[in-house]
Amino acid sequence: EFVSAEGQLDLYVYNQREKRTYLEVLQDFKSAELPLSYLISHIPRIKARQFSIASSCLKYPNQAHICMAVVSYKTPFKRQKEGICSSWLASLDPKEGKEEGTKFLVPVSFSKGSFRMPADLTKPVIMVGPGTGIAPFMSMCQQRQQHLLLHSKTRRNGVGSCDKEKGDAAGRGSSSNNIYVFFGNRYRKKDFLYEKEWNQMCGAHNRDDDGDDDGNKSQKKEVEVEEEEEQRTISGFYAAFSRDTEKKVYVQHKLAEQKEIIWEVLGKRQGHFMLAGNAQKMPNDVRNQVREIVRVMGKMTEKEAKLFMLRLDSKRRYVQETWA
Image (cartoon, rainbow, N blue to C red; front, side, top):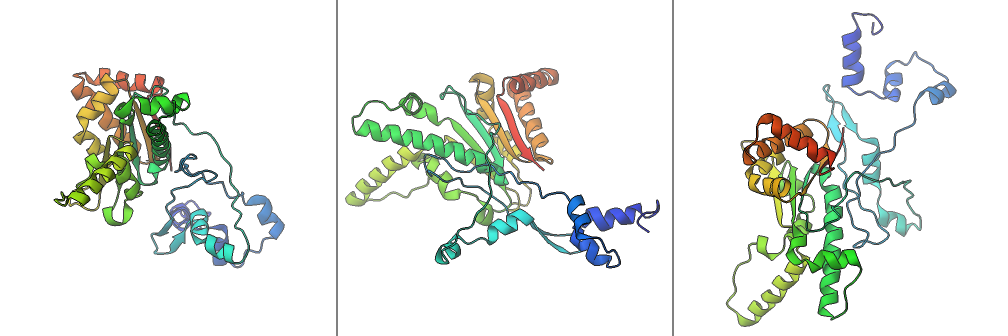
């Protein structure tokens, strides 16, 4: 009996571990006949899902993109489970709706997030986003990219500076590109989110292009390189794919490899650190790694390193958005 003291473990395994829904429980216990009005009054509404916007309103006017993982897994008893919201969104086909002359209406609302790019655009920023945690950083990098492209176009046309933020952003040249992005996922081939966009934002200096002896092609390449440099938005992109190597590599390991950059940004240039992603182990692992880098590179004691991190928190120079 689930209601007995001895049956509490069985109840936990049956209910919590298997994540059974109200409908599944009623299907298992057909003798339980509950009035529909009772169920409606006691079953809570489905909670709204929150997604970070993964696009810039300058690049995609009147659109808001999201980066979503479709939830699909098997329970300990090998029962297939699907995420309610993600599965429904993934099932929608805009083309199908357009052909039938109908529209898919998805109720949405917008709220402010925690991340703010520094007002001084010369301040460097480190962005760490494993998995779909990369979404808000794609949005911010696209926004910066559009500012730089607009200024570059204005400069070529010999027109005066655009509005202050856009003008200042590109007027400082490469100093406005001091953004360092750290991304992590399982497999490079199938889990590299926004690979094309990141390659573009890194520009020609981070790409391996073979030389060409042909004069015309060489000239064409120079034009392409120039265009790529105009697209360049970030100074460094570092990816960790945990299942592609015998020893699992995560974003905190990539941070350790780039300890000089981390210390340069946080310890010397008063830069910012932003973190987004799953709220389980990752945020603590990343923070511990950053604290260790600060301790070693700054030649601090453990206590001094902890105080340094707390000061980053108080000045909102270390900000994280995580979810369960």
